[in-house]
Length: 274
Image (cartoon, rainbow, N blue to C red; front, top):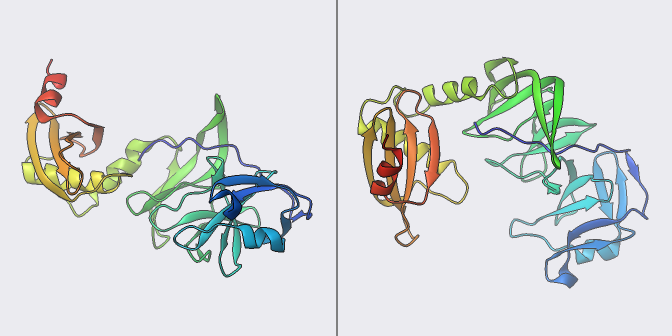
């Protein structure tokens, strides 16, 4: 799993008066995010916009929009008026990963779906986004480390939870102990368990990793694979993406990917030569 840098959260009072300013994608600004005053009222974990803002809100293709109040409270709204407070992340609403985002219900994290309905209430202090069909979930205490504008959390007691809410790795590990979680995921997928002795096994894990990446697909029109020491090199050209070549490095012992670089197979081999 990728290490996760979390922005500081701001969980504010349950009532925001009509004079509270906000930002949202605006119709009058051609869908660009704009700043407004007198936006609406928050009651509990719901947001009701004033009529002028409700009419001006620009929804995306799925009929959803993100509204952020000046107090860094974030809400998803649907065209039918439903709303849900969510985690304030990356200066906006938490992203949907694998169909789920992190909502807030009475200041506790839950997972919500695109209908803004709570689908999982794990009961942990911290939920990380879903990745490979699993989410790291943690209880504190945590140690905060500041890195510029971001806060990196250390410590805690974390485990791995699947999409059904079952704990597949007990919550006894530190939040940054990614090797434990990667080990489970790489040994419990549809691909052969590591170590990877054959090109077929390595190619299966390479496609699995690439399919899980943003802006990439496991639909390839051609690929090339070879092994250099303890590393497999998988070069591929994606369907419908011209002839751009990308090369993924894959650890033969763990099946964990190391890097993905836009380069040819020969360039990657030269880069890894002693």
